[in-house]
Amino acid sequence: MSSRARALALCTALVLGLVVTAILAPLPYSVAYPGMTANVLGDDKGKPVITVTGAGTRRTSGQLRMTSIVATGPEASVHLPDIAKAWFRTDEAVMPREAVYPVGDSTEEIAEHNAEQMEHSQDTATAAALDQLGKSSKGIKVKLSLADVGGPSAGLMFALGIVDKLDGDGAGHDLTGGRTIAGTGTITAGGKVGAVGGVPLKTQAAHRDGASVFLVPRKECAEAQAELPKGMRLIPVTTLDGAVDALKALRAGGKLPSC
Image (tube, rainbow, N blue to C red):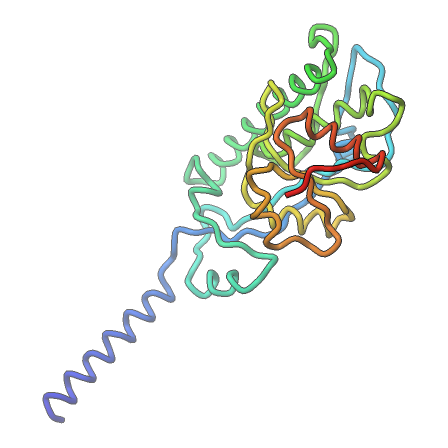
Protein backbone atom coordinates (compact mmCIF):
# COMPACT_ATOMS: atom_id res chain seq x y z
CA MET A 1 0.00 0.00 0.00
CA SER A 2 1.38 3.40 -0.93
CA SER A 3 2.01 6.04 1.73
CA ARG A 4 -0.81 8.13 0.26
CA ALA A 5 -3.26 5.23 0.51
CA ARG A 6 -2.19 4.55 4.09
CA ALA A 7 -2.70 8.21 4.99
CA LEU A 8 -6.16 8.20 3.38
CA ALA A 9 -7.10 5.02 5.23
CA LEU A 10 -5.91 6.52 8.51
CA CYS A 11 -7.87 9.73 7.95
CA THR A 12 -10.99 7.75 7.05
CA ALA A 13 -10.65 5.67 10.20
CA LEU A 14 -10.23 8.82 12.31
CA VAL A 15 -13.32 10.45 10.76
CA LEU A 16 -15.38 7.30 11.28
CA GLY A 17 -14.17 7.15 14.86
CA LEU A 18 -15.21 10.75 15.47
CA VAL A 19 -18.63 10.13 13.90
CA VAL A 20 -19.22 7.04 16.04
CA THR A 21 -18.07 8.92 19.14
CA ALA A 22 -20.43 11.83 18.35
CA ILE A 23 -23.34 9.42 17.88
CA LEU A 24 -22.68 7.47 21.06
CA ALA A 25 -21.60 10.31 23.36
CA PRO A 26 -24.25 11.55 25.84
CA LEU A 27 -25.17 15.20 25.34
CA PRO A 28 -26.30 17.84 27.90
CA TYR A 29 -29.89 17.98 26.63
CA SER A 30 -33.28 16.60 27.58
CA VAL A 31 -36.07 15.58 25.24
CA ALA A 32 -39.46 16.89 26.37
CA TYR A 33 -43.00 15.77 25.51
CA PRO A 34 -46.58 16.97 26.17
CA GLY A 35 -47.44 16.10 29.77
CA MET A 36 -50.59 15.69 31.82
CA THR A 37 -53.24 18.36 32.27
CA ALA A 38 -55.62 18.73 35.20
CA ASN A 39 -58.85 20.64 35.72
CA VAL A 40 -58.22 22.86 38.75
CA LEU A 41 -61.98 23.26 39.20
CA GLY A 42 -62.41 19.51 39.59
CA ASP A 43 -60.94 16.62 41.57
CA ASP A 44 -57.57 14.92 41.50
CA LYS A 45 -57.33 11.36 42.81
CA GLY A 46 -60.66 11.73 44.59
CA LYS A 47 -59.90 15.09 46.26
CA PRO A 48 -60.91 18.59 45.17
CA VAL A 49 -57.96 20.44 43.66
CA ILE A 50 -59.18 23.66 45.32
CA THR A 51 -60.75 23.63 48.79
CA VAL A 52 -61.86 26.91 50.36
CA THR A 53 -62.78 27.39 54.02
CA GLY A 54 -64.06 30.59 55.60
CA ALA A 55 -66.04 31.68 52.53
CA GLY A 56 -68.83 30.32 50.38
CA THR A 57 -67.96 28.81 47.03
CA ARG A 58 -69.89 28.50 43.78
CA ARG A 59 -70.78 25.52 41.65
CA THR A 60 -68.81 25.86 38.45
CA SER A 61 -69.13 24.55 34.93
CA GLY A 62 -66.50 24.19 32.26
CA GLN A 63 -62.87 23.50 33.01
CA LEU A 64 -59.69 25.41 33.76
CA ARG A 65 -56.85 23.03 32.92
CA MET A 66 -53.27 23.50 34.06
CA THR A 67 -50.76 22.01 31.66
CA SER A 68 -47.35 20.39 31.96
CA ILE A 69 -44.50 18.76 30.08
CA VAL A 70 -42.51 15.63 30.82
CA ALA A 71 -38.85 15.24 29.96
CA THR A 72 -36.10 12.67 30.02
CA GLY A 73 -34.61 12.63 33.51
CA PRO A 74 -31.31 14.14 34.62
CA GLU A 75 -29.73 10.70 34.77
CA ALA A 76 -30.92 9.64 31.30
CA SER A 77 -28.48 9.63 28.39
CA VAL A 78 -29.56 11.64 25.35
CA HIS A 79 -27.58 11.07 22.17
CA LEU A 80 -27.32 12.73 18.77
CA PRO A 81 -29.90 10.42 17.09
CA ASP A 82 -32.44 11.28 19.84
CA ILE A 83 -31.92 14.98 19.22
CA ALA A 84 -32.11 14.61 15.44
CA LYS A 85 -35.40 12.72 15.74
CA ALA A 86 -36.88 15.30 18.10
CA TRP A 87 -36.06 18.20 15.75
CA PHE A 88 -38.39 16.72 13.13
CA ARG A 89 -41.33 16.03 15.44
CA THR A 90 -43.89 18.53 16.69
CA ASP A 91 -44.65 16.47 19.80
CA GLU A 92 -41.05 16.48 21.03
CA ALA A 93 -38.65 19.28 21.90
CA VAL A 94 -34.95 19.42 22.63
CA MET A 95 -34.15 21.58 25.65
CA PRO A 96 -30.86 22.25 27.46
CA ARG A 97 -30.79 20.03 30.51
CA GLU A 98 -30.10 22.99 32.83
CA ALA A 99 -33.27 24.69 31.53
CA VAL A 100 -35.36 21.66 32.45
CA TYR A 101 -33.51 20.81 35.66
CA PRO A 102 -31.92 24.03 36.97
CA VAL A 103 -31.30 22.58 40.42
CA GLY A 104 -29.85 19.24 41.47
CA ASP A 105 -28.25 16.31 39.71
CA SER A 106 -30.48 13.50 40.97
CA THR A 107 -34.15 12.64 40.63
CA GLU A 108 -34.63 13.04 44.38
CA GLU A 109 -33.09 16.52 44.52
CA ILE A 110 -35.13 17.69 41.56
CA ALA A 111 -38.37 16.27 42.97
CA GLU A 112 -37.75 18.09 46.24
CA HIS A 113 -37.03 21.36 44.44
CA ASN A 114 -40.13 21.03 42.23
CA ALA A 115 -42.29 20.32 45.28
CA GLU A 116 -41.01 23.48 46.94
CA GLN A 117 -41.67 25.47 43.78
CA MET A 118 -45.22 24.09 43.58
CA GLU A 119 -45.92 24.97 47.22
CA HIS A 120 -44.67 28.52 46.66
CA SER A 121 -46.76 28.74 43.48
CA GLN A 122 -49.87 27.73 45.41
CA ASP A 123 -49.22 30.35 48.08
CA THR A 124 -48.72 33.15 45.55
CA ALA A 125 -51.74 32.00 43.52
CA THR A 126 -53.91 32.20 46.63
CA ALA A 127 -52.56 35.64 47.53
CA ALA A 128 -53.05 36.93 43.98
CA ALA A 129 -56.61 35.60 43.73
CA LEU A 130 -57.73 37.01 47.06
CA ASP A 131 -56.13 40.35 46.24
CA GLN A 132 -57.89 40.39 42.87
CA LEU A 133 -61.20 39.86 44.68
CA GLY A 134 -60.42 42.35 47.44
CA LYS A 135 -60.69 39.65 50.09
CA SER A 136 -58.54 39.15 53.17
CA SER A 137 -56.50 36.02 53.72
CA LYS A 138 -57.14 36.27 57.46
CA GLY A 139 -60.60 34.74 57.29
CA ILE A 140 -60.26 32.68 54.12
CA LYS A 141 -58.06 29.63 53.77
CA VAL A 142 -57.38 27.92 50.46
CA LYS A 143 -55.92 24.44 50.14
CA LEU A 144 -54.61 23.28 46.78
CA SER A 145 -54.10 19.58 46.16
CA LEU A 146 -52.60 18.24 42.94
CA ALA A 147 -50.51 15.09 43.10
CA ASP A 148 -47.50 14.25 40.93
CA VAL A 149 -47.02 17.82 39.68
CA GLY A 150 -44.14 20.12 40.54
CA GLY A 151 -42.79 23.52 39.61
CA PRO A 152 -44.35 26.99 39.47
CA SER A 153 -46.03 26.99 36.06
CA ALA A 154 -49.58 26.23 37.28
CA GLY A 155 -49.78 29.47 39.27
CA LEU A 156 -51.99 31.37 36.82
CA MET A 157 -54.50 28.55 36.48
CA PHE A 158 -54.64 27.99 40.24
CA ALA A 159 -55.37 31.69 40.75
CA LEU A 160 -58.11 31.69 38.11
CA GLY A 161 -59.64 28.60 39.67
CA ILE A 162 -59.82 30.28 43.07
CA VAL A 163 -61.41 33.39 41.55
CA ASP A 164 -63.98 31.28 39.71
CA LYS A 165 -64.80 29.23 42.81
CA LEU A 166 -65.30 32.31 44.96
CA ASP A 167 -66.77 34.88 42.60
CA GLY A 168 -66.97 33.71 38.99
CA ASP A 169 -67.19 36.74 36.74
CA GLY A 170 -68.76 38.79 39.53
CA ALA A 171 -72.17 38.76 37.83
CA GLY A 172 -73.30 35.21 38.52
CA HIS A 173 -71.55 33.53 35.60
CA ASP A 174 -68.61 31.17 35.35
CA LEU A 175 -65.30 32.52 34.10
CA THR A 176 -65.11 29.58 31.70
CA GLY A 177 -68.46 30.24 30.04
CA GLY A 178 -68.81 26.44 30.06
CA ARG A 179 -65.71 25.97 27.89
CA THR A 180 -62.60 23.90 28.50
CA ILE A 181 -59.85 26.49 28.87
CA ALA A 182 -56.21 25.64 29.43
CA GLY A 183 -53.16 27.71 30.15
CA THR A 184 -49.82 28.15 31.81
CA GLY A 185 -47.83 30.84 33.56
CA THR A 186 -46.24 31.63 36.87
CA ILE A 187 -47.95 34.11 39.16
CA THR A 188 -46.69 36.58 41.75
CA ALA A 189 -48.61 37.58 44.85
CA GLY A 190 -49.26 40.89 43.07
CA GLY A 191 -50.85 39.10 40.11
CA LYS A 192 -48.10 39.37 37.49
CA VAL A 193 -47.93 36.46 35.04
CA GLY A 194 -44.51 35.12 34.09
CA ALA A 195 -43.10 32.96 31.31
CA VAL A 196 -42.54 29.24 31.85
CA GLY A 197 -41.04 27.44 28.83
CA GLY A 198 -42.26 24.42 26.91
CA VAL A 199 -45.39 26.24 25.72
CA PRO A 200 -45.76 24.49 22.31
CA LEU A 201 -45.84 21.11 24.05
CA LYS A 202 -48.35 22.41 26.57
CA THR A 203 -50.72 23.64 23.85
CA GLN A 204 -50.61 20.13 22.37
CA ALA A 205 -51.39 18.58 25.75
CA ALA A 206 -54.29 21.02 26.13
CA HIS A 207 -55.64 20.21 22.67
CA ARG A 208 -55.37 16.49 23.37
CA ASP A 209 -57.46 16.94 26.54
CA GLY A 210 -60.23 18.93 24.91
CA ALA A 211 -59.27 22.58 25.37
CA SER A 212 -60.07 25.10 22.64
CA VAL A 213 -58.62 28.19 24.34
CA PHE A 214 -55.13 28.60 25.77
CA LEU A 215 -53.95 31.39 28.09
CA VAL A 216 -50.28 32.10 27.39
CA PRO A 217 -47.81 34.55 28.96
CA ARG A 218 -47.53 37.34 26.41
CA LYS A 219 -43.75 37.00 26.17
CA GLU A 220 -44.24 33.45 24.85
CA CYS A 221 -46.76 34.28 22.12
CA ALA A 222 -44.37 33.64 19.24
CA GLU A 223 -43.25 30.33 20.71
CA ALA A 224 -46.86 29.23 21.23
CA GLN A 225 -47.84 30.15 17.67
CA ALA A 226 -45.02 28.10 16.16
CA GLU A 227 -46.67 24.72 16.80
CA LEU A 228 -50.23 25.76 17.63
CA PRO A 229 -52.75 22.92 17.19
CA LYS A 230 -55.52 23.55 14.67
CA GLY A 231 -58.56 25.18 16.23
CA MET A 232 -56.73 26.36 19.37
CA ARG A 233 -57.22 30.03 20.26
CA LEU A 234 -54.40 31.84 22.05
CA ILE A 235 -55.10 34.58 24.58
CA PRO A 236 -51.97 36.42 25.77
CA VAL A 237 -51.94 37.63 29.38
CA THR A 238 -49.56 39.61 31.57
CA THR A 239 -51.59 39.88 34.79
CA LEU A 240 -54.30 37.98 36.64
CA ASP A 241 -56.64 40.97 36.23
CA GLY A 242 -56.05 40.84 32.49
CA ALA A 243 -56.72 37.10 32.37
CA VAL A 244 -60.00 37.52 34.27
CA ASP A 245 -61.06 40.38 31.97
CA ALA A 246 -60.18 38.30 28.91
CA LEU A 247 -62.28 35.36 30.08
CA LYS A 248 -65.21 37.70 30.79
CA ALA A 249 -64.88 39.12 27.27
CA LEU A 250 -64.65 35.62 25.80
CA ARG A 251 -67.88 34.57 27.53
CA ALA A 252 -69.66 37.74 26.44
CA GLY A 253 -68.36 37.70 22.87
CA GLY A 254 -66.31 40.85 23.37
CA LYS A 255 -62.95 41.93 21.97
CA LEU A 256 -59.99 39.86 23.09
CA PRO A 257 -56.25 40.50 23.13
CA SER A 258 -54.32 38.53 20.53
CA CYS A 259 -50.73 37.44 19.97
